[in-house]
Length: 468
Image: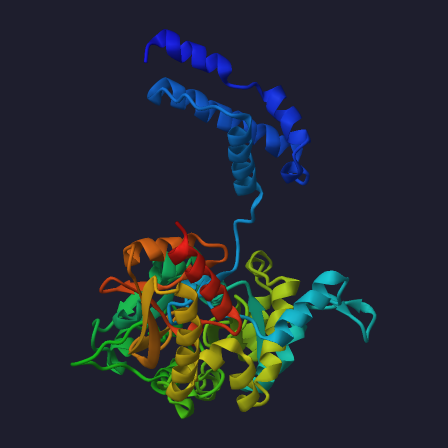
């Protein structure tokens, strides 16, 4: 195509004013703000011009251009944070938002968000109150702590505690406990930001009490034990128990802190899961401070919980950094509602989604898988083979790293497209459906598929596999 031909085609591209006028009479654009509409029109018209110059595009119709403008405008105005269907079998999927909130938490959040609240107002005394009071009493009740508080997340909790208890001082940590959490954040990095000085003791696989004893100096401000909740060291290993560290702390008058990471309030081993130290066990061992997450094994909103002795917690509360890391009213309302369920372990396991999914029996999983398989088989209309296979689910979220949860997965083998193409189509569907691929089969795990979502998956499979 000659330059003259391209110039002629460029003249056919409609102007912004014309497309604005056409959009005014198109019902699809009724709720699209004029600013967004203008941006989309300019974007699409520029795209058409570039196409003419590079490819010699010749088909330009008002209806086609309007449709492109509408799609672009929708992409701009659509929410970026959306719900997805987690069919991966990873219960605490960090990339997918970790814990789902229980009904009580959702209801309480809605109530608090819809009106004013007593966030920092003491109704009894009729004067300013403290936001931590919403959860402090129940945290103390459930853990045996003398005092407690919550901040925005556990990394923040650790940072705040280190800044308060050991700024400018040495903190002794076993080399085998210098963990890295999601997003490449490491305990040494958090410690450096707090102003505390990291002092490593022992070796990666073996640390003894004498290593801590040898590491203590006049500038030692804290003994820190980090629970390795996201990995396990096996083989020729040795570590110092929290009780031993607490006894050393008492002898040397140095406070002891434990970061439990995922943290749990109940012993989940009685439900067939691995044994993780509970918060109450750590506090009974004598730790001055225990920190843990709200949105992992606790099954609540993102939060960092600090529990321990009253003297330590009061120091932490008075740290100016606390305000920068403080928890908001919606998170507090969800956290309180979640914690209230722990007054009855069986009720917590039944009503907190994270615990419910983790403790599902294999028989319950098999029943879910078989029912879903029947629904999906009808939906795909001979466009794919639907089968079942026994595989494993994962806890995720840096909890139970070596735990394998038996599950029965649903396998989809499409006849006219690759499993990779199906996975992409399912992922791009709205709502997005996230599964995994193994041996050219799209795999979905019923453990993390919520009630009613099987119909969403069914409709998506039917549409994707049967569309021409």
